[in-house]
Length: 141
Image (cartoon, rainbow, N blue to C red; front, side, top):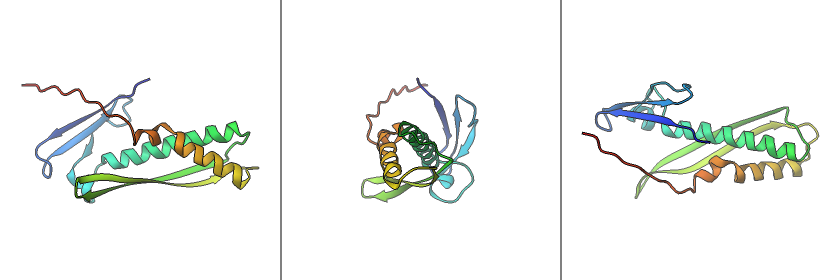
C-alpha cells in the first residue's frame, strides 16, 4: 500500500508560500508558509501533520493491542506534540510526545500499560522516525 501527497512552493523561504495536497483530497492546496511553520501564521505545517499522523497511528495501534488482550476501548484520545528546535546542525525535530486519555472497561493498569507500550513501539509512524529516507530528484527546465 502506498499513500501520496504533493507539496508546491513559490518564492524564497521567508517570503514564499506553498500548498499541500493529498491523493485522498482531504488536503487540497492547503496553505503553508514560513510563518505557519516557525511563527503563528495561518496554514498548516509539516510538524502539525506529523503530529496528526503519529496520534492517529498510535491510537489505532493501541486499539489493536487492546483487542488482542481481549479488551475494547470505550474511548481513546491521543494528543501528539511534535517539537522542532534550532540546533547547531540546523532545525531538527527533537521529539514526538504522545499524551493519551483512555477509558477501557475491565482493563487492569498492567494490561493497559503493556498495550500502550507495545502500541508506541509498534505503530508504523513511531518506526518512521528511524527509517531510511530515499529521494528521486528531477530538475526540470
